[in-house]
Structures are given as C-alpha cells and as structure tokens.
Length: 372
Ligand SMILES: C=C(O[C@@H]1C=C(C(=O)O)C=C[C@H]1O)C(=O)O
Image (cartoon, rainbow, N blue to C red):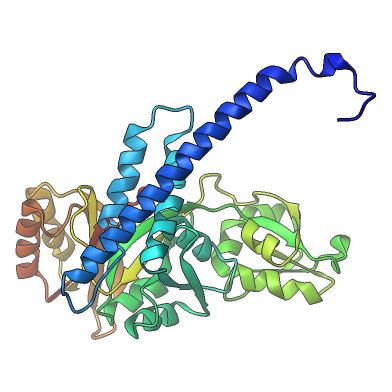
C-alpha cells in the first residue's frame, strides 16, 4: 500500500477482509471435498476394473444424469439450478478423466455449436475431435476411434437435420443422450474486412435461414453463401476484405474475429437439440426418452395405426418425423421420440403392438432426458 493513501480508505475494507478470510476457508473445505470425491471416483474405477467384464465402461450416462438432477433438487440458491448443475458437470468431468478421459467426435471444425454442445454435455475434461461431415462422426464411433459422437438433430426454427436422421437408418449405433443449446448467431468480420463494403456473407445454410429476416433488412444485396459449418465460414473470411460470417461466439473467439452485430437470429428462443451417439444401450436413469424408427407402407390410415398403441398405453410422444424410405417407392419411415425407457412396462407393451403393425421397427435407443 502506498504511504500517501488516506487512512479513511482503509476502514470500509475491514468487513471485506473478514469475508475474504471466510471465503478462503470455505474454498479450502471445497477443495478437500473435491479431492475426496475424486478419490471415490478412482475407487469406482477399481471396482469396475475388477468386475471381470471384457470391456470396462467408465462413463455412465444414467448415473451422471442422476447426479446432476440431485444437484438441482438440492439447490436452495442463490445460484440458479442450472448454474449449480454446471459446476457439478465440471467436477464430474474431471473425476471421470481420472478414470479415463472420454473421447468425443463432433461435427467440426473447431468452434461449431456442436463442439459447444459436446462440452456442455461431457464437461471440459472431454477430448473433442472435429469431423468434417455428419457421416464421419458416425463412422468414427462405429470404428471405435472415439467413445461417443455428437450430431445436431433438430432446430426450433429450421426443423430437422435430415442428414442425421438418414444416417441412423443404416447404422447400428445407439442414441445415448441428448443436449439442447440456445443458439445465438452473430455477424462477424476479420481485421481485413472493409465493413462498409460487405457483399458476401458466409454461414451454414441452417444459420443463414435462421437469420433470413435480419439479413433481408440489413444486407439485402449481399450474396449469402452456404458452407459446411459456421466455424468454416468464420475461418474463411480471414482472407476476404468484402466478406462477413454468421457464427457463434466460440468461433469468433477461436478465429480472432470482431462481432459487428450480436444475436441476429430471427427467433429469440432459437435452440438446437443434439444427440449423443454411442455403441451401447443406456440403462434407465428415472427420467428417460426413447427414439425409434419404423417403416410403413403408404396406405390410408397408416400413420394413425402406427401411433394408436402409444395413446392406448399412455406413452407420451414428443416428436414424429417422416422421411421417404430409400428402399422402395412409397414406403415411409417415421422417426418417433417418446417419454420413457424400453425397460418400462408401458413402453414394452406399446412397442410390441407397434411391431405388429409395421414392416420394420428399429429401437435407436433409450437415454436420459437432457438435464442441462
Ligand atoms: C464414478 C463413476 O464413474 C463416472 C464418474 C461419475 C462421477 O464423477 O460422479 C459418474 C458416472 C461415471 O461417468 C460412477 O460410475 O459412479
């Protein structure tokens, strides 16, 4: 402290000193408890190893969902429930990394919303690997090069990501989880951009569509160029003086871009749902969802017949999506999501009835309902 500081400046600091001492002592306790928790997680790993199973799986999605839900239920504030769960998400992620760092392939490049969703779901101790297309995410998981994959499946403004659904038809992978992300789009430029001369705007086609009204109003004449991802758009404009990109904040940070206009999406509650894909069926967590795909011949009343057992057995549908089948003209596949796990009695009864009414039925997986 400098000698010319007035003594009166010191007085209000005293309660601050006491509070900071208190915080230091709480932090020391939290630190000890986190270490104790981490040692418990290590012991869990030992037990799993000793189980004698040919392939030990350290990561347990159903248990992690339960831990997060408990953290939210216990919370009495002042932190919000989600904030509290996010802290526990990070503690668990670090504990799991002691057992085995989890490897996750996502729709890249670095800086995409899918990477953001992967980190939100697995925490920042996960090792994330960018893939250039959705098919590659599926292939990487199938080949065993990573433990899980993360792919976008639907957006609240733009609807379904057909490429992801089509991949499930020919794949044996299971859906192991879901995660939702609020999507905020920003218009960004690089240090070479002449901002008054923007004539080209790059982004992913879904993002361009999600900002269509804003672009019509602010850049009616600029050419809109769709590229593989918004992170690729962000990367690309670094060498073009007349171009801007639409992407998320992570991409702006990663590629050192300046945000010109924030939150330019047309719908304020724009969000995207992502799926976690893996190789095994997840046991029940207590609050689960199931996704199936069913093939149906196009005949009058086919859809009603397909959905009727869900109503009769009181299974709540959360989404129904139709895609033309690739295997024959006028055959359709329906992607259906509903509440419950395939081990639940009502779900078993409904699915048994559905199986009798369709030409093909595939269970894509039962998984914990997204917590964060
Ligand atoms: C400790 C375990 O292993 C992992 C770590 C968890 C944790 O830190 O709470 C939870 C589930 C698993 O992903 C466990 O299975 O309980």
